[in-house]
Each structure stands twice: as C-alpha cells, then as structure tokens.
Image (cartoon, rainbow, N blue to C red; front, side, top):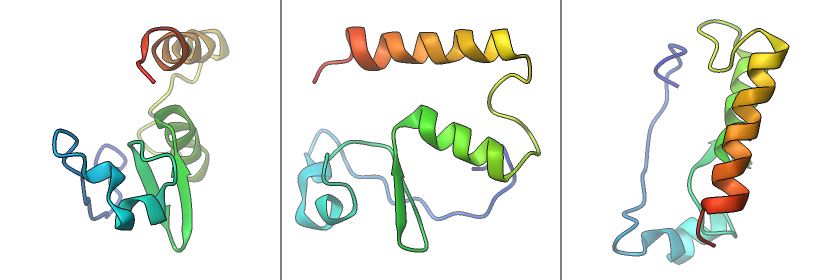
Length: 88
C-alpha cells in the first residue's frame, strides 16, 4: 500500500500470540490467515490476489512485472510458496 502511495491503516495480528484466531479477526477472515485487506466491507485474502487487485485498481508503482512472462514467473514462485512449501 505504501509502495503505491495509498493511505491505509494497518492492524497486524500478533501471530506468535495467535491473534489471527481471535474472534474479531476471524470475523474479518474465516481462514485466520494473513494478510487480509478490508475495503469498505469487502475483504481480500492471499498476497498474490491482493497484489493483483492493487495493480488492477491503482496502476502507479506496479507490484508485478508488466511483461507477461515475468508476471507468470512471479505467480509460479508464489504458488510454490503457497502450495508446496507453506505449512498448513
């Protein structure tokens, strides 16, 4: 958000204390995962989905490469982390 120059207020849950499983955070994100981006009642989760949304709605300071092949490689790397090595 700062990279794109967007105003925002962060409320990070303390992961080591398990705050992502507190009732108020679960009301925002039933998965109890981070990050979660809340915008006017709508909530997005998953880093890559949030990055893509921000790039599609705020073109300045892109988070993902413009080149389609490079962007696909970024998505592939993100999927390795999310699906293959990330603990569930």
